[in-house]
Length: 350
Image (cartoon, rainbow, N blue to C red; front, top):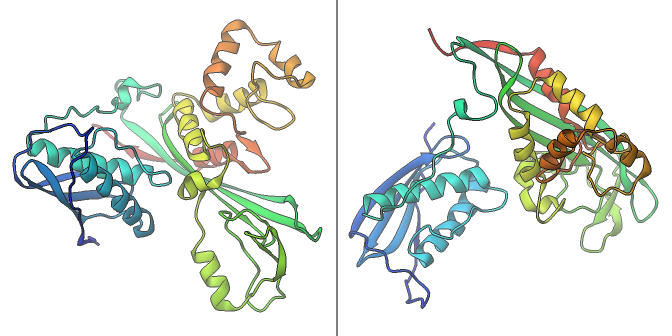
């Protein structure tokens, strides 16, 4: 069902010393682009060469993610009087890209002449569909892991958590990954002190579990397991991609960025080849790709068995992704295998 969103951001434009004068034609201009879950359609109004208002006429992405991203980006686009230097919003990468591309299309209709860098076609990247391939295979996989941890609360009571990895994967006829998208839920008991971590306090009517106040970082009571409280808790869960930078993994290389890098690395490889990569190039202690500067004797011994070419390949991986593909935080490889086992043929040509 089509959503319409009459959100209008009108901003008084002031002179900015560093602003670049752009020659826009006055009027109202439409722009369209793909968001995360469907089309994004914007209307930009130009008056006296400056962007005055931006309206979101259509979107299909999750409202809680799209609306804040739209408000942020619209304000910055109007202030910059263009899209130059305006970056995506953390935690809303796909919605942000769609908003920026739609705004760019509208500005080009107003005479901006902005060159849009297009993504490489699938035939040009690692996982090219072989010439003459008449079908591909799509699979949806998952893996679920239970964890004792992370850690204990301020009263010494154990924290428990579980992880659900979800993988939508496209395979060619040889089982090579053509494209994939991976996300994950990580959910803990309410006594974990990580504020962005989704919690599950228990089934309605069960006794409350220790509840940790995130500001105080200590247990302040028991969770309220009333039906309405549990429903709100579960309905508010965010995946690791949705948590974005608030996940707190690494300010420079958050989970979703590393997962994007891994998804590119997966292309052109079978699940069996990825399992062999994991066994050969990753630490037996924590499952992470081994870094060349490791000081751990066990990891160093494994690293020294690699050839120079293999070390170079590993260096390319750890430059963008260092998290494990299979550890207590979730088994990504198992989700890929599940997707392969569940794959169904999709005809793409005659």
